Image: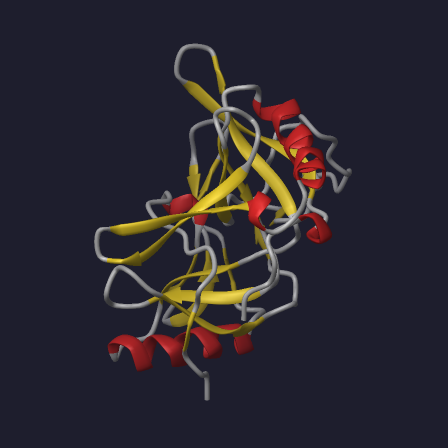
Length: 226
């Protein structure tokens, strides 16, 4: 059975539908699903039934938490699977999952790997066409740190900074990679279980597109939290 442990790391808050995985019934069968927005303005709903163990892991946790299966979950850069609790405050760590999740939809393979639809490797600055499921982090406005906000209890947050864990020189290497794509103003970016970094970048007056930043070196990152 899946065990429930309060997760003390980065727990996503207020992210869009496209930034998370979900289990839902497709043809009366529980499947891993995403919401995928195309640059042509279409919204796709890919699903896969190739991850029975992951479905069982998440649904066992969901039943323990709420009495019902299915719903959202996340996989972070350390391949840890986390699901939200009922209190809108905590998340549970329910295990790890290392098998790559891929979706086939209308002849295209969609995954968090840094490749295009022809399986060519992306270069930093290329449009990110993978799913947007990932864990959000923030590049500070002064471009001197990376952080996430951890809610400790109701109405109390703590800013967890990368410079708390590694030297400023090592942080600067990561920041350089991000701001080369995102620009000088800072803001949100994402990392997925493939260690791919991607970010929304504004083009024109209001249009945002997602761009690939590069691959994360976990030795220059926040520590794994069990």
